[in-house]
Image (cartoon, rainbow, N blue to C red):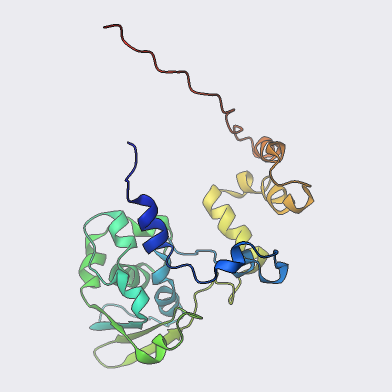
Length: 239
């Protein structure tokens, strides 16, 4: 595999978008506006464009889901990329706004295991409608909001979230990050020795030092990164 000849054009012309401020590439580093301070930590095992809608569902009181007739998700046009019903596999469900919302409603959780494809969730996703709302569109790009309205046979309820938890405007704090790290690692027995090393990286004088990574691996009983060795030259077959 040698890669596509159009990879750079697509990456920098479509995915990364247009260059807005060329001067900033050569300007002095502004520590008050570091991009890392406007980061986002994902708390749901689905595409980030679905997270505001998922949080809107999670904040609602869903005493019963059996009588839900219709779910309306209003959002911004950027999130309409996920306006699709899923194919029957785990990855497709993560990139379907209908399926992500259906998962949050039926399972009341959105961890990796929750997004194993389930036919009953896919069937419920057929009740989910996605539209663009002008009042929410006006908040883009400062926010990526979603409003979820759930209709039961006798009542309806609605909730709006401007940005999901984990967004820099709604930080989850060190405790939340520790819980996410522990969940990803698998257990407190494995994560607790590693966490002080990760949060202590500020004490490392040069983050590029490979020894810092090796010390972290040693503390966590993980194999260190392999040494990079030059590839052997290919041998030609005699003709």
